Amino acid sequence: MSEDRSTAIIVGAGPAGSTAAYLLAKEGHEVVLVERGTTPGSKNMYGGRMYSHALNRIMPGFWEEAPVERPIAQESITFLSGDKSVSIGCQNMGWAADPYHSFTLLRAEFDAWLAAKAEEAGALLACGIRVDELLTDGGKVIGIRAGEDEMLADVVVAADGVNSILAQKAGWAKMFSPGQVATGVKQIIELPAETIGQRFQLEGNNGAARLFVGDCSKGMQGGGFLYTNKSSISLGLVINAGALQGSQAKLCDIIEDFKSNPHIAPLIEGGQVAEYSAHLVPEAGLAMAPQLYGDGMVVVGDAAGFVLNLGYTVRGMDFAIASGEAAARTIMEAKARNDFSRQGLSRYKELLSQSFVLRDLEAYRKAPEFLENQRMFKAYPELVAGLATRLFTVDGSPPVHLMKMVFGQIKQSDISLMQLVRDSLKGAIDL
Image (tube, rainbow, N blue to C red; front, side):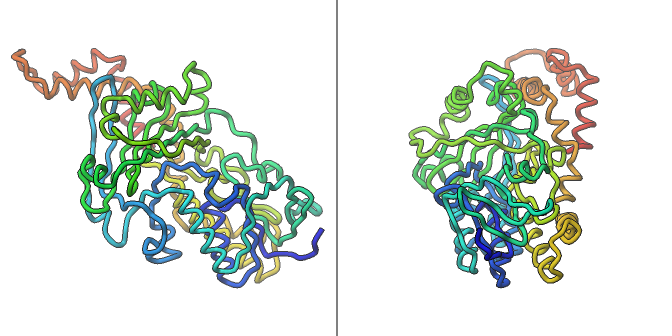
């Protein structure tokens, strides 16, 4: 075992790990950033959208050099039911103006750039390394073992993703249940930039973000997404792993059906699939969070379960970046006191609470439970699509006033009026 000791060994060169490495190295601390993939981002699968506020605070105007794709100017959510669809959309050109609200991006390129920024600041990046064990001394984490190599550090940062091996090795996390995670599948479909602009009615380099619910997930808990890149589209599905496990459906078949849906097919017509990937996504919020800190270690990003899915927004990267920042600040303060005990690292939770991370996750603590309601993914899309169809149909039938039309459509659905009222109230409170 080498007696050389770093300030921090960070396992995982995703947004959380690279942010922590960048900030620590920038202040002169010895940092080793360990990545299992051959390059940062090579093992990452992500829908392709990042809210910019967290990184902009750390690197103001980062988009001037970062490999981002398009600033989002259009948002929509679409209810799919058979050959019918109903979309609720919003266009705000201010979102696509400096300071930018959010960007589409390709994780392989973005993660490599952010890790390179950490390297430029002085961090040592080591790729192609699988961490097998934590090194401990009297219950305190003091380093890692990778194959036959052992490395020591004042603090280990677990940034190793949703199925965090390090958090499990430390005894801080239990194996999640299938209902607490979703299986995400994504295809990158190449199309000319001009074609993308025309099909989505985009000006210049502006981008669009579209979410889908209903038939795209075969009525299971989950939904679809579509993000426009410069010369490609990120198209995919995120479906609850428990629901998928209990069905006879295969995810590869479901996404092909999604691509052939009459509301999707025209948008990707003529495109070539350049990339296909799948990944687990944490969905239970604070209900699946492990112990966040202890003697010699902190847990960040997806490894800490810091993902928020509200149905109409899905966030992960801003939480990852902010948690990486909080971890770095915590380690700097602990280094100044030379106290890397559980008490010495307790500042991490304080910083998370002061930032938006724990505030937002706590505010929407009940959202995952609300989204377990199966009516959200079949009955309600059918109700919305059916009602809209009746509303816009003119065929010589006797006129029906709007209120009577709504109640009539509810009676024809599988939803009782009481269920609708309860779900509406719960959704308004939880979301």
